[in-house]
View (cartoon, helix red, strand yellow):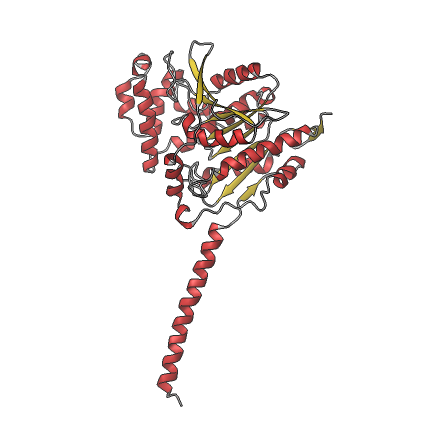
Length: 392
């Protein structure tokens, strides 16, 4: 027979072992719950969203990177350093009305699959990125039958600067001229757009300012910043902010000769917060009297009421560039042509599932574009008030 001390000791060991086992089970449950949770969807019910949810399988579409890729910083950094896809671009310079020049990089090395109804995919990279950063999307788009072109702002992406003016974050004038040129060059093609990071602000500004005459049929935004004034007028928060500002200053220095007449370069290079930098560069360059006026004119969602085409936004809730509190959920719940897919993981423009596959967000963006075109070819359109009408 066991003694009382032995029984108490055995009970104590069982309690300790049971506690450890229960803790491990809870940790494992939380681990898999975090990794394999479905994206959160925000939308307003209508015929269009019902079609998109079904065709894009959004109610079952997991983003589940392995644990060693789940960290937001790993996702953000990998998206910037992973080898680019094998894509060759043919650069075309396009002169604007004010004699400024923008660059269009057309994909030429990957022959798209021929479809009956062809589509031009206009890609807008972040303000400090270029066509190479979008090469993975270009390669994937060619496999889907899209003809891709990357829009480079004047003075960015290695393009020349022929006027003493850089394009501000929410000024869509140059993009407008580029879109009209593309439509004239390919009149029988449909036009879709995908933007990344700060490029999303430009796309949303464009769609809002030109409304039903935007000439773009559908848009997708990966890691968009909605309230740019809130994001960039505050103090610096992380090493990413300093790296981003450093890249902007690199562009400024590369065009020092052209910009020296309108920008105090010494003061601008000494600025180490976004508010001061944009006040010294863009605010003065555009002739605004105050930063409040500048942000009012450059806020991406200033004309959101006038956006008349379907728009997908993909945000990661752990984005180190942009806090979840800045996501305007009400927009997606009110306007039926807006759809937000929010993942727990993904970083900023990351969404890397493994080191050899395309971005999860890139694949979703192209699926969304295909689904929208499938919906519209059935003879239906949807306005921003949720009313669906037949166009047949």
